Length: 68
Image (cartoon, rainbow, N blue to C red; front, side, top):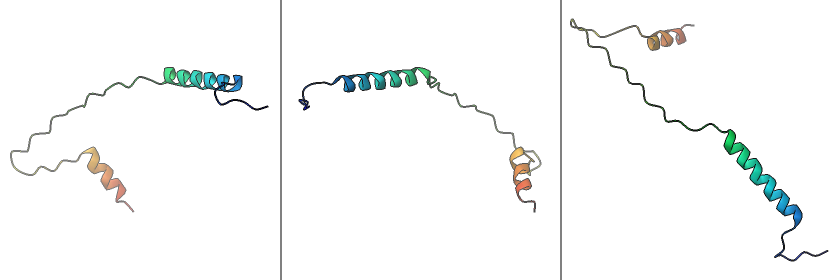
């Protein structure tokens, strides 16, 4: 059985329809992308008597990593 290149076989038609349906299903199940507003926090004011070191969560995490 030889098929002419211009004819569309039933198998190809159903495969294409199945692929299109799967793509549509996946696209409808994906959540919509919502832009996230950046959370801005105000920096602390510098101490009046100098210095400026403060024990923050970041510093505490660093100290935990240096323990042997």
